[in-house]
Image 1 (cartoon, helix red, strand yellow):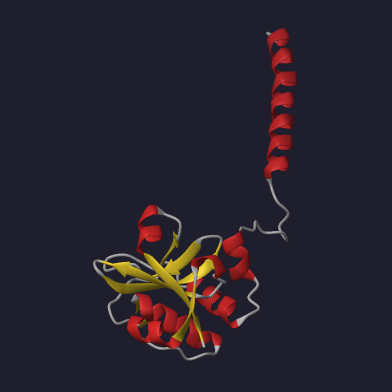
Image 2 (cartoon, one colour; image 1 turned 90 degrees about the horizontal axis):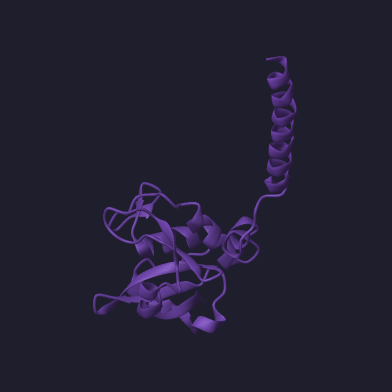
Length: 167
């Protein structure tokens, strides 16, 4: 009985030591958060567009509400209007007005904070804010919440029209 217990103690100690080493290797320092291209642009805003993107990103999880432009609920253009307004610039409130009041930006020249325009159900009817790294934040539709999506997903890649930069 003592022999069996004596054999188990070194195995147990070895297992605990290895688990400690493995978990230590996979952890990060508290002061150094993980960074991704989209997240980095949102974490340290510098430009007006980056500030607006950070504010829009902070609304992830807020409910969709047609005509909404407040934390209690957003529609797509309301989210853009809210984010830029809180970043210090008033922009148009509707998708059509945003289209007319922004400088056209091709996909390859997008910068964080650019407004993205999409052709949905036969017309230009949806916008989001570019986060970088082929990701954007938007208020998708009724019953959903503000979310981050991939610009290069098949659905949004096909629906993308152009970017727009507030003048």
